[in-house]
Image 1 (spheres, rainbow, N blue to C red):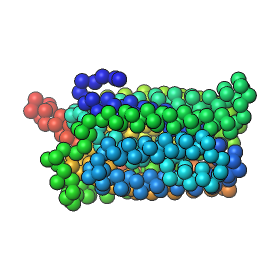
Image 2 (cartoon, helix red, strand yellow):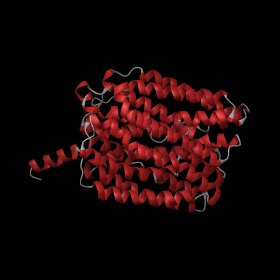
Image 3 (cartoon, one colour):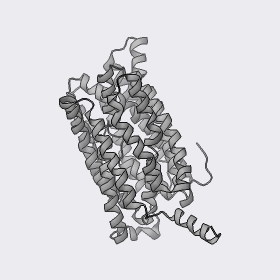
Length: 417
């Protein structure tokens, strides 16, 4: 495992589990829509499957946010991982399409590259695994590792093509092999979760406070962040990797392995951006880092589908990854920083609620637009909505600063600067 002296042993374990799940979820997202449409499921129904999975994810976020500290965070992580194993087994051996659809929705398969209860729980646990001064760095490193392994997953999505060419395996059989591997990786994650210590749970001194109503200050922050993040999530949901993969497939006739390579490059560039985000945030603050990087990338999104060739669209799509993901570790760090430690699990669930709801309906809307209105229209809508979010976020939270930024201001004031 990677070793960081400022991070707890449980933090190291969660770095590894997140990396493994990022790898698995990334490669599944590339061919998931293609797999289902190959079973004669119309694209708009694939969108409904993704929406259904996101709605289940929304429900699980709320349940997890309010009950994880009572039931146990580790138990909840184990439960969700068992669902993942189940989805891999079913998709590997079952051919009955209605059962596959139900399984995909119930286990959130195909929707896990976006926020979910497992990711939320891991972020809450990690927030107490290091000091405030290292929190943004910790989230940046986690996201960097996730992006690198996700990039490897995108590259691995070309493995079915390799199987088809080398041993003449048919397409559907090669996809089912990928689901077998998906289930096996989930089992490895399950074993790692079993190694987590009792320190991942909320401390005894804070357990009673965790059941009390949220403070007025926290409620105000939660409402504002929820509304803004839901706007961003709606825009992002219009362009999930599953639908973008389908867009490249239809727009330019690219094969799964080529699409996987595009996502691989984008993820590598995103990994670089996570490290840059930490350094930039230390100089200009979390909110400015989020907005100054995110807004230009959203403007680039608007122009991607209107470029004439696959090469030019790919260049812009991958280039924006240097900017589009800087807000992820900074947003995660900011959310955990501006609320009380005993409120973090509930806040994580509550903030994810409207985000999940708006993102849940996005794939259906996007797939309908792509099929019946215009294949590229979601890019335009997503870019505009997310740009408006960036501007609103800055003006709403530019004066609400996390503890480490306040401490830095205090040090500078005492030193005479």
